[in-house]
Amino acid sequence: MVTHLPDPRIVLDPGDIARALTRIAHEILERNKGADDLVLLGLHTRGVPLAHRIADRIQSVEGAAVAVGELDVTMYRDDLRKQPTRRAHKTVLPAGGIDDKVVVLVDDVLFSGRTIRAALDALADLGRPSAVRLAVLVDRGHRELPIRADHVGKNLPSARSERVSVRLSESDELDEVTIS
Image (cartoon, rainbow, N blue to C red):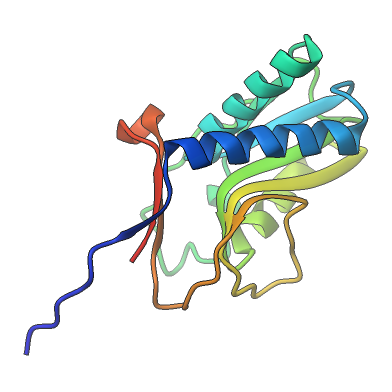
């Protein structure tokens, strides 16, 4: 018996993504009372371009550049035994580092919370921020750890069996979020 999977349903189109990132940028500025001592760290892979997009929006509002870096959490994950073939990326910290800065971790989808736990472990090895916050494009629920996002583009209730896919023009040639 062959089962037909339904076509993915678009839940965020390019305009929705742009508006969500603009809102997240404004929320970050309001919570931080400006862009001083702020560092955005994008989690590989799709968190990196999202962090850059948010930084661009913050700069357009504040008129000052925001430090952006890239964080690879591959070696901090607790599922390496199950999926040992993950490709490692480079961690790139801004020139001023993260010590005594407000670090906003940026990721595409928040699901179980395990990637963010790994990111927190990685941060502990890299420095001591004054505060750590989390911004995600999509929060789909189903947390396994007590982690929540401070800034969310879209809350997307989903079944564990469903798949949420984020595609960004920087890597996928178009912007969309689908669920299937």
